Amino acid sequence: MSATLHKHLGNAQIASYYRDGYLLLPPEFLPAGSLDKVVAACPDILAERGPRTVLERDGVTVRSVYGPHQTSTAVEGFSKLPQLLDAAAKLLNDEVYIHQSKVNQKAAFSGDQWEWHQDYVYWIQNDGINSPNLVNVAVFLDEVTEFNGPLTFIPGSHREGVLAGTDTQGMPVGYEDAPSWVATLTATEKFQIDRSVIARLAGAGNLVSAKGPAGSVLLFHPNILHASLPNLSPFNRRVLILVYNAIGNPPTNTVNPRPGFLAARDTTAVRPDAG
Image (cartoon, rainbow, N blue to C red):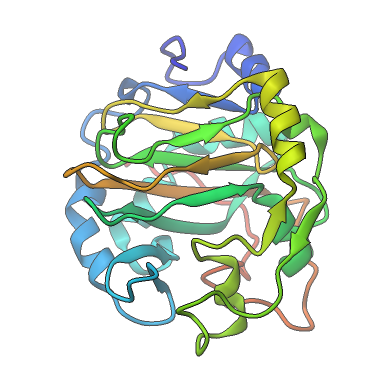
């Protein structure tokens, strides 16, 4: 899963991303100390309670907090690092803005699973983003091991496009009184992919889990099939995810748009910050 160290992506790394649908970069890809403020801000981000926060099915444990680049100066500054913007722009062949951001937490002993899914189906169905020309940039805030619920991919599955999925009706158990859009954010995936499709693709491409020390940077395509197991360990697994979208690929759903912390209204190109 590791990649040769470059402060900016090289041609071989870009080709690897296009082939496999993901690329894992070591902590040295980021400027030294650039993540410190984000890690320090993380407890306050996860302490937020409101529409941006999604809890696990137990109703207590924080699962995700959305839009931290809009509320945290530390995350906002980090999201403008030249290394991240350059990587996203090279992969998308365009200037970029942040469509969505979140801190995903798998709390020690209680972090729940993420079922097999693709991300892009949510963005085309809910936000009207007409091309999968986006990239997820996941930055490990804690060490990610085989024990605390790493992301697991089926390499190459992004080349299948949007896979047929079942649009589950109603709200997941425990979220009956939540706004309808919350159904797309919980442990029960709204667009569920047939298990025979998952088995076929896994048989052809195998399974790979993304593991590494804190500060590792994981880039992955919005159509790659991925999932993660519950966190059975006594160690937290927190990940900051920045979803960069090409400025030429804006949301078109203006009739019933999702909240701005799920689908950004401002599609102006992000300019780099020296950090």
